[in-house]
Image (cartoon, rainbow, N blue to C red; front, top):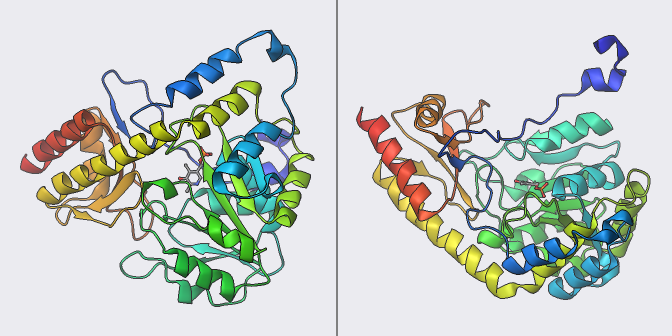
Length: 353
Ligand SMILES: *Cc1c(COP(=O)(O)O)cnc(C)c1O
């Protein structure tokens, strides 16, 4: 079979997404989806697009959605790029902005899609180690680089950098593109978007998958200087001119317009996180400070892989990474109160037995 593959395909090491299993009565806390569901207004807008107009291609520039996002984030529409999930936006950013002779820098423990894109696009990179407490140290990024990408909050640790620290990072690399992946920013971190006006090298990437509960719709976007956005558009129009369908564009607009729902839903996640942290700490877990919709935890007396397996036997799934330095940690998504109770009860049983 593989004799038909290109050499590029042979050399790929694809990203492995968290599983989407079909287990009855599952408590699914492994892929950082929202437990609360999308805005009802977004659902209504999506339904409205299930119409005869689906025979027509969507707006290739997603003009209305970009205008809505621009108004929301107080930038110009020329400073907004949208894509089919932020993974696609990131892929275009890697191709358009992050490939240089000097290495791309990112943390050694971070979103594991980054090294995958580097292989796909042939980008040299250097992984910068987190410190002992799994924090990103901005001072460690003071080294020659073609570009930098950092998630804020970082994944899978959940630890956030301040906007001042992002500004320092930008000042260290005035001549290199710097991408801040803000997939989880709405759960307690400071967005870097206000820095865009004074930093033409800054690209901020956000997604509707987590805080807007639209992972199934696939909408992500980037905000940055118009010059950076033009680079992304050039790559997009060399790949797929119509990344967002009509239902996605309409649903995303309605979601942004439903500010009350958004604020309420993220506040509930933040409250749920604090409850989850108290419960886990009560069972003896060490919990890293999280500004995300998940927590990263370890138990001093139990191995991460064993805990993940034992939870799975009780129909609770969490994410475990068999990677150096973090193999004893579990990444647990904040769920509903009922899901958190089931998780904590399962852990209590496992630890007690
Ligand atoms: C979830 C996630 C994304 C991708 O989200 P999309 O669903 O593709 O928009 C990007 N970066 C990080 C760090 C994530 O956790």
